[in-house]
Length: 171
Image (cartoon, rainbow, N blue to C red; front, side, top):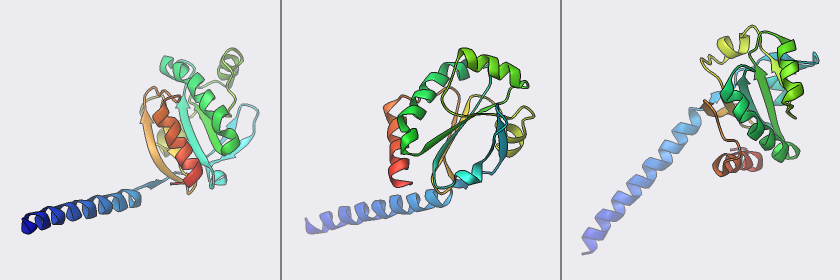
């Protein structure tokens, strides 16, 4: 009987070691967020590397994207909930015209900065995004911890918990 328990204990220990090693490998596999520089609608320049030490959420979107428009209110609520705790949200519009985005935001305002990537330099060349909306969550050390493609519910409990964890731990 003792032999049987010893066998199961060995299997459990091996599984625990495997999962621990897997977590170490996945942490090592995190990709450093690629630096970029873009301007907002007022001409203020933002450089991603200057935000290291903060949790950053990049959201690529456009005024003509119905899924982007649908998720914008929950993204704005997320930003307002956590901005005082250090969350930075950067909306990156891939629209061609600043005026189109300005007009859209007058009717659909958001609290976070909206940057313009009208030439697709960051969208296509730097982050190789092929569709929108696309969201990248970057930890305090500057590593991409989540890539989300398609419409998101930023009010979901799971997403809110992950933001809170990153702000508290930086993990």
